[in-house]
Length: 192
Figure 1 (cartoon, rainbow, N blue to C red):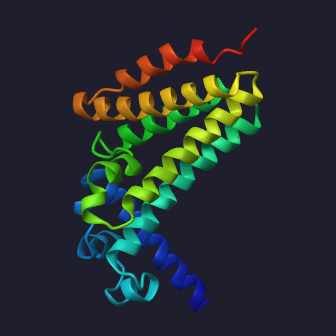
Figure 2: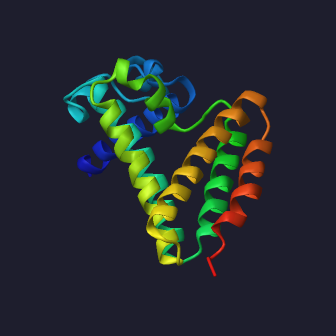
């Protein structure tokens, strides 16, 4: 019973760190901010994250990255790459709306300011983006795309969606994600 409570506290802290990372960037994820947001006791930081703040922030960005990777893998398993992009866009539209355009992608936030704030951030973010790109590229290859074109299209999808998220936040409008979906979808049709 105690162990379940400990996992619950750690998960609350990670969830809070993800949200703070999405809203404030890596520099805005402090131990005090995570404790205040999660309601966790101060002693739980070093109990669950012996490496302190950096371990917690890296754990949060990995958690968020794994969530998107799982979404990509699930859609890929269904064999429909367009569905994969539609689900990504729908997820980000819900997320942006729910947070009143305050929260973007935690991996992008870490990529922009994490390397100066958190050691190992660059490696972790590179791995997350590579995992997303590889998942999309593999799905495209399975749908008949030549491997190098599949990789280029995967880069385009990730870049376009991430850029659209930033534009949506700046404009406080979901239109950029709709535009990306409308323009990318035809490129993902099975080759003849």
